[in-house]
Image (tube, rainbow, N blue to C red; front, side):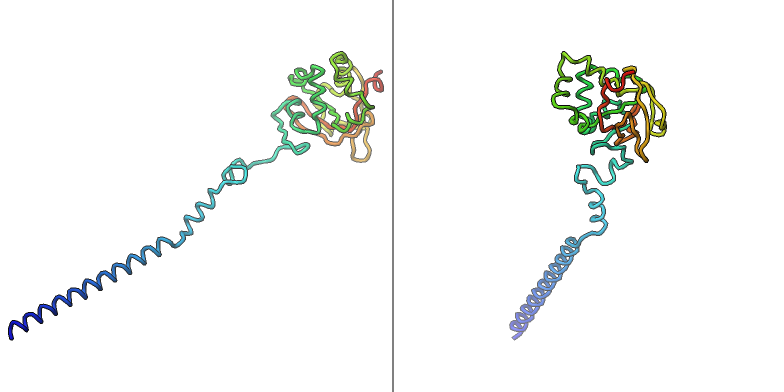
Length: 220
């Protein structure tokens, strides 16, 4: 009988131990699940940090390279630190003008110290010339004519819009006089309207006009 009691007592201890082990395992599993759930919860601080470092559409980090916008013509950025030809090349509206400057061999002149004031005809102004005129001027054998024409659009010295007063005149590099007048708020140069004034450059200023100033009409 004692042996039977001892065996029953032993079995009881084994069952109790098994139950304790099972409970311990369940508790450990519950703790592990809680830790996993916590690790999966979003961290607001981390999200904000990641948001602040998201790249912009042009590849820059947010806030990088932001600053004052330089004057613009034709949608292309110009800067006061660039020379007159460099700023002329910064806009498609002056592509014909800069091509003519190169063909006439005036690039070095307009890249010089200056300062210069350039009344640059727009592409539309060149297109308004009689048919075939521009094509003929761009030919190598007509380089002198092209040079004379362009020199009639350049004045020595830097003259901004405020300096272009009605009744005054300015002398060009081609030794021609340009008459200045105003039509309301519009500045006129020998009848040509200044569509865009005061484009600052490192060696002067550019004013875009809507007509080509033909030498033969202005020679005195």
